[in-house]
Length: 626
Image (cartoon, rainbow, N blue to C red):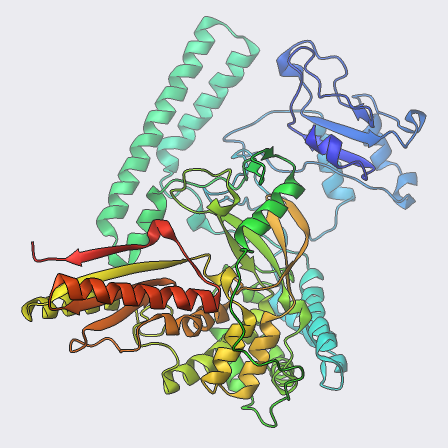
């Protein structure tokens, strides 16, 4: 009913496997829609319609013709006259695997006619696609496999599409649009494809043990449906129970074998298998008045304001007003080798952003795209301008783990899917920024996350070594544990760019970072719904290669100025937004006084930087030997 109420601007709705009224086994009627179903008056549940077409009542009923369930539709499709008539054909053409669902139905003739005479030649009905276990696609549906990409043809088409319009004589926005359009056109000329990967199928499936059993079970099921006697039902249930038992044995055996063979590098893979699967669907959310909201557009608004914006004020009085900052006279240009190496480092099988360009296509066209991308990126640095199109993200929402109330919008985490060419540029800028930060110690040495060559293990070693050393000296040791709530959304662009200038970051990097942070926009994707565009006033996009490095610089002043050393009595260790202050003193009174000073210092930092500490994750601990 929600679709019938919310999609009033559409002319027609085609729905399948929808809810039916248990009294008449028909989908609901609606005052604004004509309802068309294959079965007009089913008498039993098994005859309920699997599909339904709703046509707006703006179209008169006498203009709608329903073909009877005979060969009339097939004859019309095969007629010569209709070959010249513009026709909109909508069909559910998923292939049902015979191991699960095998039947003979008159609709198969219609499908066969469509494949042979109507659909483009680059569509085939082979190579099933096995969805991952996280997907919500019903197991009986196998998507149609489209034509694989012809690499040579794609590169030839891309080379032809990259015309002189991508030269630096045009504006940055025009060049950006032309390069993206050239890649997309070369890609779409062949049709998108679904990659088949046998490793994604059921690795535990044993054809010798299961295929014959599935065949016998399906035969028993058909006999039971045709002649529902007690004997036929018992036969089917026997085969079904035997099948389930065999599947359980094979899965258990495969799992034990997997655990016996894996090493430490595959431990996370085993953890992913064991943890609970998350449903993509967002349940109704509570608004500020405490009312549950089910409308998907309103839920998108609640999620945006609950995950991507936080009401906070930062004291920016110490930042001078710069109305028109001058562009840097020089900058360190990006080389073609940098672009080539960065493209080669792009990971595969990552979700693309609004441009829909996967990393695999960029890597495939590395040699062709290197020159125009190098020119474009250098033009961006020269003008201190980050393209507007790359500031538009598509945000997907995932649940935070172990939350008590998922009707609260704050119980979800936003992941920004960014444009691929923009992320490539951000990776290059991040390399430059990280090099400068390490050369100038602009990132506090106590940060052990988000840095090359550092990990959480370094933090554990540092913490335990420092505590043991202070114990040997007879000191009282305390730890203050702080966590910044909604760390990335709370980053203020003016404060960050001012901090970069204070640390004498190269001016051209300051300008491009300032442009990167300003006027950002996003839309939320919930299931198959894409929301309206929301403007983002502050914050770092969660998903950008630049965001981690920028945040490490942003909160470096929260850490105590002393670098981590066994000889220091006050040090800080941090992993991104989780900060631990370690304090040592001769007695409990001194350690208490130190803790008060450090906590006051941290709160003052929060006021200047607009940060909010999470009370639930803020704690202190006295470390003792026993």
